[in-house]
Length: 191
Image: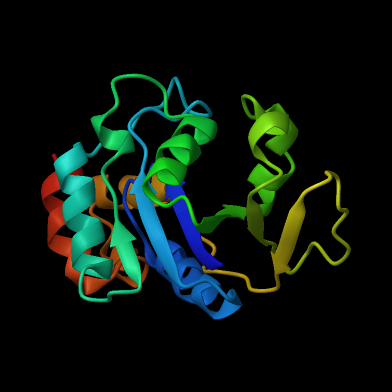
């Protein structure tokens, strides 16, 4: 059975840590990776993306567009309501009925999975790739799910910190975003 990864989130902006995770998860036995920015994150209802939907898609296209292993999707951006994983998986399963999906998440989200909406109903037919940090030496398997812990620590940076760096015109910001998205970011976050 074909296995496709799903990597979502605000991606506001996409940074080198995101890129590292995306490339690393391809080594874990998936055929391709769908990268899908969300419109309204249920985890960030009070902190919506600063970049427009089109700017976020332009950044993703600049980073991943030339590699056929990455599939960019604006499905959640077209929604007017909160982006829930179970709804997205229903949609993807309707498009790809013979595929097993694997969610790519960080350890912080892994610890919160049981609180995700309808988690017990959609989690069984899905695999999880959880990126853990080096400080987490023993990782508890807290849920009855098919989980693989990826022993890889991406660059320690957050999109929030990168936006702050752009706004303060910090010249070191170029160390955290690829050159291909730097100009899009400048137009988006420097005002």
